[in-house]
Amino acid sequence: MPAARRPLVAGNWKMNGMKHSGAELIAMADGYDAALKDKADLLICPPATLVALLAAETTGSGIAIGGQDCHAKASGAHTGDLSAEMLKDAGASFVIVGHSERRTDHCESDAVVRAKAEAAWRAGLTAVVCVGETRQEREGGSALAVVAAQVRGSVPAGASGANLVVAYEPVWAIGTGLVPTVGDVEEMHGEIRKVLAEALGEEAGKVRILYGGSVKPDNAPTLLKAADVDGALVGGASLKASDFLAIAKAYA
Ligand code: PEP
Image 1: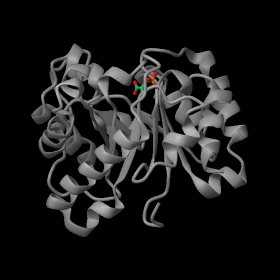
Image 2: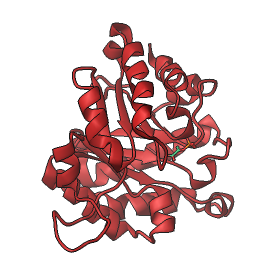
Image 3: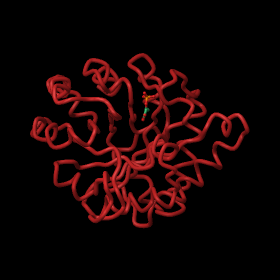
């Protein structure tokens, strides 16, 4: 991996976690030793109810805290929603946008995801923009085209290595225990980098592209060492400090 890109191992807790889950995060912070800090960045995206608490509990640990979604607007009459500014105020430095569960459950289009990424930047957050094909699209041979279109539609102009992370998450691999072949991952990450380069030129070489979908301690060393893979977005295995640290240690 080029020196311009430091690996990032990110955890998405989804709708899991209570106040006592802070203990798991503190265990992660304890295990984030100097050797690992030297090699990789860690990020945990808990449910919004825990962002402020966990950001306070991990101050000084080096583990970043992020949100799982944000509204495109800064404030207003949007019951139940959260703005990027609110996440920033609570102590977040990243926000995931366009996760496939948001795209499916809340019908989020690429245009909506792009507006959310712009909102993240407005608030000073790094946007983790998720893309990925369905099983049908993979089997039908359109995975590369589908994901390329998602990147073109979801990444706003003005992206940089500092304000953007892209997460390639095949929908069929999320929470299923299925993972693509290393060849398929490398081909897709290469395609995403190519699409980013069309828009960003040389800056595309600084944008981290994560792989996500059933990353576990046993498959992490293979997946994370694949060409153009700059880290992982981890769901289920990020809930336990021992699993999450074992994944990150693929870099140590
Ligand atoms: C995710 O939801 O972003 C994810 C990758 O989940 P899992 O690791 O559980 O497949």
